[in-house]
Amino acid sequence: MVTVNGEQKDVAGRNLYDYLVEEGYELTRVVVELNLDIIPREELKTITIKDDDVIEVLRFVGGG
Image (cartoon, rainbow, N blue to C red):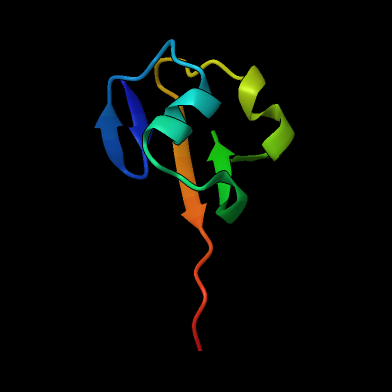
């Protein structure tokens, strides 16, 4: 199991980029943290999610 934004998910073995796209994240408006490391956008396609990974997806929102 993998923790994604505080929720347990069964996504180990999947590509991180593909997972984010399938979940509907707009990749130009998020920052992805994997096990406390910020992942550069260009590296997302190279990462396979592993058991016990902790992923946080932070979205940028506008407002005033």
